[in-house]
Length: 507
Ligand code: DLZ
Ligand code: SF4
Image (cartoon, rainbow, N blue to C red):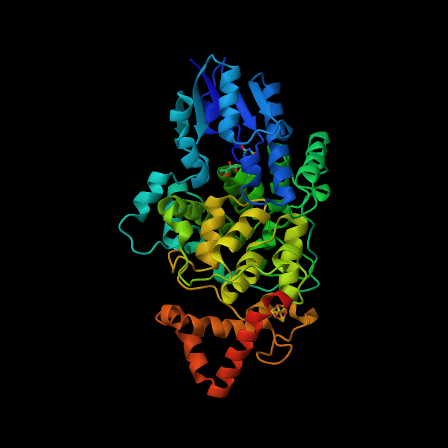
């Protein structure tokens, strides 16, 4: 019985579960479709990345003798369902549809309805590219009233044996984050990340995207990501050699006009299947064991992969669909226009947003402590902010984006993910970056005409949400500091914050 094997745009791994079922006579389908390309207004680079990587993946399969049907965007097929239905119609010998479980709840619900609609058997296989299966994660989560990443991570270290010495963690500690919070000196030479020159296939897709998605964020003509497994592996190996040694200590640092610093820029490759998580971890561990990379960098990097990434995916599937509607702090304010164009006098926001526009990329501290922190303090709409992150980052798929944004950055889940809101005043940004020196605003001021907006908004956030947050043990110090301020100053701060919130667009 021949099968139709559907490969989604973020399933471009040669060893993916559905392809392992391939037998002669089966047809593999990849489809560029309107529904997936427009469920949010994806950044142009994200669409180029996915379409071009899909086309390269299909070409490789064809070269290996696999029979492939490829639906390109200009065939104007509305949805994956229609792509599958029309392929089945053209190939009536195909009896079953096989697909690896989609990464997003939205699509998994849709696929679940196909069997009935298509009157063909539809087989959905677990996505075993992740190390922790849904069952493994749910077993870990069962019976806990708090899901702390650190404990999950330790289980994953034991499970994978990565950076372990028998039962003990390498170096005697599980986590070296205390060494990983250094600001970066302004004059440190930062090696440029590997860039890839677009080939003919990519250039065709760049022109298509410019044509079909002219209003989406970004400029397709400046696309330089890798689109094949081979180029993604080369870029990652380059990172391990050049940036990883300093990744640890500077991973939270921000430097003017240096969007990449010592980060790997590989989440977009990993999340669409061009890189394999086990391979990446082994490369990092090997570099550590060969004495080329310090332990704080290797452990910090591996923790992101087998700890944080697997943990947010587990939580997403455990808590959806209810999770998406959470709004613990009732944040409803509309997103100011500068989230789309970057024209703001706040230097930190201008830097975070303009690099997002240029590269469909920002590292985690820009996302969490600049754009995310601002959204948290200003009470921006959960729906608008989560849609924004999902649209503008090339690595964003809902399973990873939603917990990171709704849970971690916006505290809209009331503390399932984070033990406290990641709210910070300008002081934090000044400590971790060199942005404030060239900013219109004064980071040391809270109420003056040109006071840093993060300051009054920080205090106002705490006071506004006192009922919901003041019992949080990790916020006690901040509330004590507020109560120690004299009443006139408290009033001035709240007045300043109210003024900022009214004039959000003009900041
Ligand atoms: C993100 C995306 C885009 C932009 N386009 C397509 C597409 O045309 N065809 C496709 O199969 N997948 C696409 N994707 C990725 C899917 O949206 C992704 O598989 C789901 O969001 C599940 O993670
Ligand atoms: Fe950002 Fe405030 Fe610093 Fe300006 S002064 S860069 S707004 S933290």
